[in-house]
Length: 327
Image (tube, rainbow, N blue to C red):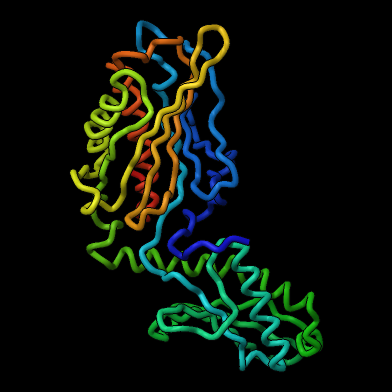
């Protein structure tokens, strides 16, 4: 299974590429033709293509509400989470190593970069212990940062001491499976605390965004879309900067036209959002059908409508990436 960085945590409560109660790539109240697709989603799933239903020369399908779900990035925690074989878990060394591997597998299933091995400099750790009380054993999982400071601890469910001592594989796997979501929640809480206490964190300041040139559009679409996005995005409260080197995020627009039956063209516009490491974190996608040739020359008000709605989607992505709540 693919391991991501701890910096690729999802917004609390979201599965990869999904919003609360939503299908892949769709946000609540999503208008036709506009969606956000997770960079880690298994497939690029876009909103359905609907026929043009506009007035005048402005394709109304581009005027809607942008989706509100997206991945967020974290400022630490770090790139690796290590689970060393526990020495105080009331298990023989071979069984302790098995528990460390079970917990690692459960955390990898949560999209965390977990490793069952000895820690290296810079690693965070989950240290597993166990406490015997009467006839039960309670496993405990403590989170330590790279400086060996404990950042929090969770306790598992009490397990019959006989079953724990026997190191029944099903018992160890169940303990790991139950602990993994709680450890994930603990990491998110630690991450939020770090962001809120750092005045230079994106949690506490507007994001700096570089809008790269748009590619793939016919007519003057590349120029018009990029210019309108640079105009519209600051209206959301984000800062647009002129150089990628000074940006927290880069947004790259791409356009693709496909011929459809009935003198129609399918227009796909993707606003790809990248973090400062160059990792793609989201795809704000707009897709619709327009009359063939409508966009071959001047985009005009179409570019303005596209950028106006896409700016809201990009802002939602970056708000989530910054760990802030939308107002």
